[in-house]
Image 1 (cartoon, rainbow, N blue to C red):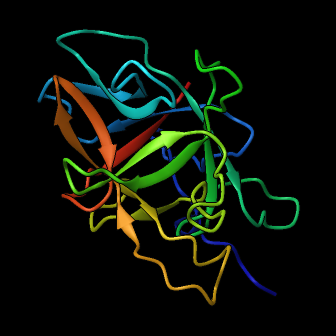
Image 2: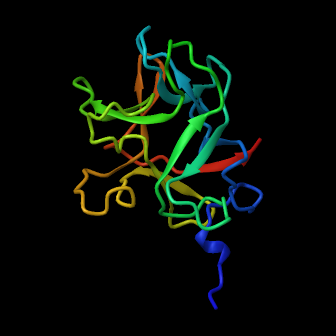
Amino acid sequence: MTTTSIAQFVLDTNREPIEGDEEYFIRPVITNNGVGRFTLVNRNGSCPLHLGLENTHFPQHSLSVKFIPFAPHHDDDDVRLNRDLRVIFQASSSCVKSSTEWRLDEKDIRSGRRLITTGRDDGTIGSYGNFFRIVETQIAGRYNIQWCPTEVCPNCRFECGTVGFLLENEKFLLALDGSALPVVFEKE
């Protein structure tokens, strides 16, 4: 008989396991730098929309997300640590025919970092661009979000990365390949 430890699950700020059919807000552990929850950002007036952080100096509407595990565990829809999943903002997009699902974009020429945008993966990164994972930091209850879809493709070699942010034109954009941004999850 196997036992399931609560440590295998990603926990929200109430110390409850995150459920795949519930909505959550994602926010940085440290929010005193003018940044708030994760949201959609119009980077340059065109589509697709990018993922970013609310700029508390110029407030906008924060958005909740749902998590969809790549390989759900039996009848259990709780989100587990170090497992591939898709993340979808629970909002409509102003971009025609565009999803609000998170997607890894190509490397940005100016910053040299891989930005996170929205939309279904078009195959440029092998159709793995929509899969992220949540890993625990050294402090319990604080997490990093990574792009490293090794569960989706165990034999692939990825240039994995952890989500952080960069400041561009007073907009906080989410990107890989920089300092990690520890986060927590708040149930809506």
